[in-house]
Amino acid sequence: MNISVIIRRHRLLLGAGTLLGLAGTAATLVQPLLIGGLIEAVATDRPVLWPIVSIAALFAADALLAATHFYLIGRAGENIVLDMRTTLTGRLLHSQIRAFNKLEHGDVFTRTVADTSLARIALSSSVAQIITSGFTTIGCIAVMAWIDWQMLLVTAGCLGAASTIALGLARAVRKAAVANREDTSAYGSGLLRVLGALTTVKASRAEQREEERLHTLADAARGSGIRVTRLSAMLMPAMNVGTQVSLAVVIAWGMARTATGALPVADLTAFIMYLFYLVSPLVMLFMSLGEFQQGRAAIDRVQDLAAIDQEETGDATGSGTVAGAPAVEFETVTFSYSDTAAPAVNDVSFSLPATGVTAIVGPSGAGKTTLFQLVERFFTPDRGTIRLAGTDTASMPLGELRARIGLVEQDSPLMRGTVRENLTYARPDATLEDIAEAVEAAHLTEVVDALPDGLDTELGEGGTGLSGGQRQRLAIARALLTRPDVLLLDEATSNLDSDSETALRDAITTIGARCQVLTIAHRLSTTIGADRILVIEDGRLRASGTHAELMDGDTTYRRLAGRQLAPAGAAS
Ligand SMILES: Nc1ncnc2c1ncn2[C@@H]1O[C@H](COP(=O)(O)OP(=O)(O)OP(=O)(O)O)[C@@H](O)[C@H]1O
Image 1 (cartoon, rainbow, N blue to C red):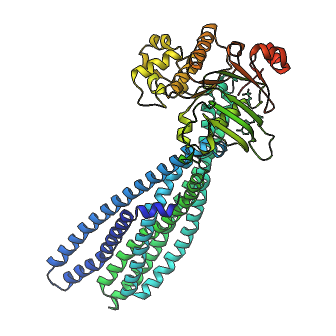
Image 2: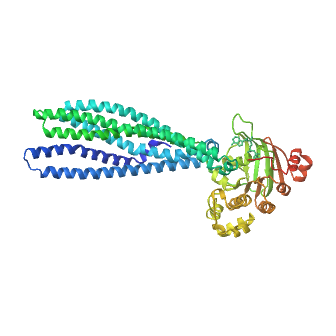
Image 3: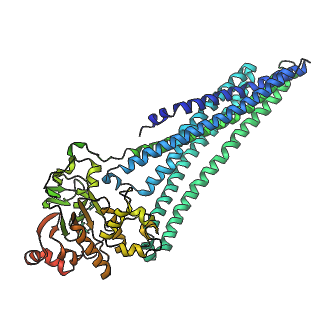
């Protein structure tokens, strides 16, 4: 994301808002001169109607310009934040899984929600404020010098000292505010971490410990927040003292000079009014500079996140299928998660026909899930080729590749929403007949019929409201709705009751008749019923065959089958 491109896109609104702000400032600056003129007219007995009308018109113009300036800059700011958030969410959704896995979710949340807001303030109101306050400050000083340069020197001395203190304070406020943002972000991340595993926290009786940890984090945020308030609280009084001292000096010296006739009363009044007008823009200038600095730090954080590596979507050169080709083919595929790690998949080759059930078995950490990640192109192989219906997946458009595959993960992520919304997530245009067919193939018809509102039953976060087995079969039905050529299924390791287990096995058999089902099997009943079994160990394909063949010929399979297959303590 390029911030200057985003600003350029909104330059019209920002420019118009700033121009109106400047016009409003000019209107403010003329006011004391006109009031001085009015005083002079009264003093010299000249007609006062015209000065009064001009002052009233100027007040009205000032109010109108200020309101329009505020609205336009606010609107530009909201447009900028929308632009940044839309770009960021797009970049995150299309990011490479490898890069995304490295991110801390709480931090992503803070950058997307809070930092974009700070960036908005910096890019819209702070910049506009710096320009208009700067203009007012320079304008006031210029007019004051024109009225009486000696009194300006006195004022500059007093206000200059106060400004130096204020500048130091503004810098300290900025530093403290950055620390406060980091502390708040740490509390947010901590909270997200705990809420994401609330059942584990409860089961581990860690509520008290987590409460204390979160309290410590929240307390750190309170501490830095109080520091921001303490420093900000001194900013205004520092400027006020400067103003009061300069005001006292200007009034005393000015009155003495008016008494001798060296300074007209109207000039003294105008000078004092400019002195008042000068203070608030000066404070605003310092505060806006501080805000802008804070915003710049936020912009850096947003830009950092937006630079996340993107998935290659691929071109159309790899489209299409080759008639009669195997559904899935691995040819000497090798893949490591990092340069230093041992290969998670090592020189694996196999070929699977258009239909049937293939079970993958192997000890925990053998590389079974990694095979799925490679088929989906969440990661790309270091060596070798993966083909889907005869076409190299590396050259296939990503959308086409994933449309041909159905993926059902072990913990079957369902989302908050109705059963129907969950089912049609990958195919929102599915008809009622399509839904009924997929639900039937996943052996879920009776379950859905028994739900209080059928397909319209609301599920909780992560699909709560259904049993683990039902959740996984719902995920299978969801995958089936896209009519995939290949269904990748990571069987749940959790113990299913015998009804659920039978339903799952029957569903796999039914679906195996219409596409290739590649399942990471944790149950003996699945491998016994499979057309072929691939035994994976240490990333290598060590054997393949039917249950009977492998029981005879492969020691690893025999050992796993003896343990009923699910790797002991598997937690993948
Ligand atoms: N995202 C990742 N980053 C780095 N290493 C990983 C990642 N995912 C898996 N690994 C490593 O790759 C190897 C294979 O993991 P994989 O998840 O494919 O095994 P698995 O056979 O599916 O295991 P399980 O049966 O326990 O689910 C393991 O050594 C694991 O530590």
